[in-house]
Length: 327
Image (tube, rainbow, N blue to C red; front, side, top):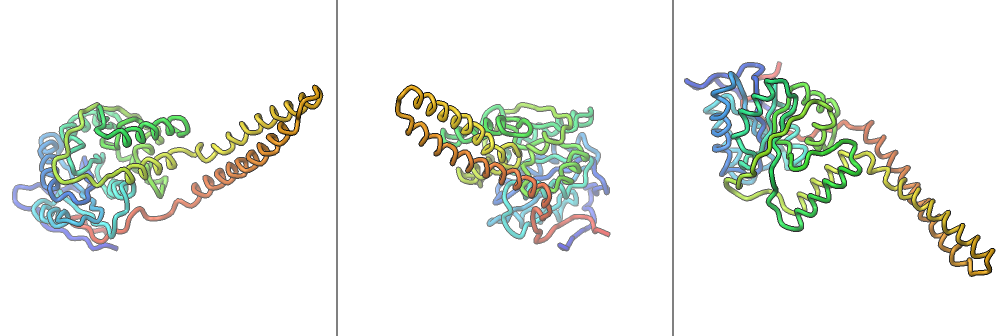
């Protein structure tokens, strides 16, 4: 079990009750330029409207001073907590694990680089208090080049066509979730959690708020074409069991084409035309049909195996700071 450090609250800073009203989970990696600023912005927005809250930073193997800086904030403010991963567990697993560690009645998830605007936090809380289970911020536009934009649009179209549930375009997961939503998703025990898709899968009520995506405050983005492509592919695979059945659909289509080729061979034979090419085409189509049929059956089996073996930790912790002692 990772060690837990605690301390008394500094003068003028309220201690965090066992169950704060709001937990803010901030995923970070190499965010030494933004860590203190994002914490200050969150505190500024929440202190006037929330009686109790906690801020949880989860660090995904930063190579700069991010961990050192957040530890300093933890010493000064007991409402700030830190989880340090043993390695980089990716941008699906690490933020989700941080959300699972939150103790609040509601959980807000955001990134440390200010591309998720802290200005939306009061409105998130207001709508959650009014009874909405999930409130998501939706970016009005994405700043990306032609290639990244094309990949993003293609992933949305594939998820819409093959997904088991609709994905909200330009919603990154930035938003507020009721505790029962998080508990429901955690019970799924998904090894590669596509969290914004899982939010929709739960079926709880969702509202969205559009906002203009601000410029990154400082530092460099940890994303590139390959990390975003990997995220899109993992998201598509994680949100679509129908995709595993796609070879079966292809096999059915090939079976129809095979029947057409066989009819063409028969018609050609009765009318005195060459039928050998028709028959050769039908034989090739049968082989491809069988291949896709078996791939489809294997895909269904893989889906069943995935459902029955979801039992692995999302991340491993190196340490955690400012969390209450566990009994």
